[in-house]
Length: 421
Image (tube, rainbow, N blue to C red; front, side):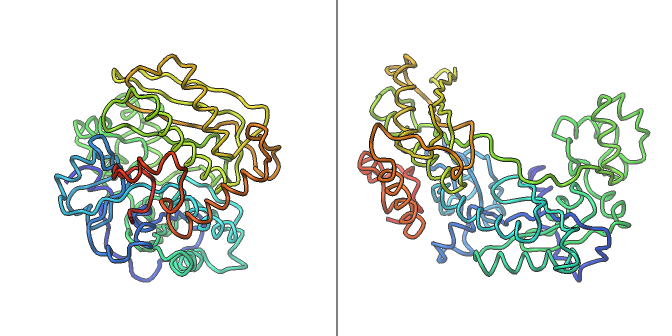
């Protein structure tokens, strides 16, 4: 079993919540989020090994069900290795827009409880619920309510850690997965931490874990007993002091309310290197559609469009253009991306990967809108929003630009649909 699997192995389900006095920090983490959302449309796959990710030779696992994880499959693993480990797994393509919509609904629930919500990703966040206790009850009761509402409203499960600090709350949610609730009492932090492996501490990667092992330090408790000066001499002043503080449960960081996204992008690695400009333009269109959908789902518009082009030798270049006004229209993003690609001088160069990104974001409702090549603004926007609604109800593959129909029907599995035909 890998180091990462050992750290994230579901712990025993907790009994009644412990004393949550002074434990106002919650870490909420959706369980196997991408897979859970996919199973809403494919309930017949429940209980089976399911992998979400790219199916091609260069595909990567984005998420794995707990049944697949039992075979050693985990996120960021090459899909070829995942298939070897679990050959009978069902592989589904990634559907970013679908996950963004569910995530937005979950975060709306979080913000109805407290304005102090700090997102870490689409599927996890810290919440400071100190200001909600008088209105909604004790932290453990709020955590229980969140789990019930997520299940009732979205049909998926989440795990919640409740603690006095962000670090301990995140560890608690990991230890009670899947579908668990764990409270670490403020006066029980050391008892909770010290039996854990040192790799549980933020900042301990594989190299640092190896360095600590050479010192005979394998648990957090063993590390906590080492003088901070010794840790600093072995690991450096900053890391040594940081780990010493965490080993005693000291984490002064506050929950920081949502920081607006700085950019939204998408990229694709081709199964084989491509030098056909038409194939690359179709890929740019597909990526622009995905980015536009995510912008609209998040209520964003952006002024800067960039493309990422990686050649067969792994040399990567980026090109960007700032528009006169922000946009959330896939059409504008696509046209700009094509112009950047055509101006890169790489139209006949074999490419391994292409990406599209929109930066300099602002709230869509407050930003002036970029018109699409002198076409009436409302027509394109209404058309794209209608496509969002159809995709939300029937899956992304139900409606798509004509240029992508042949490619998607060709069975390459990268049309962004939900796996249904």
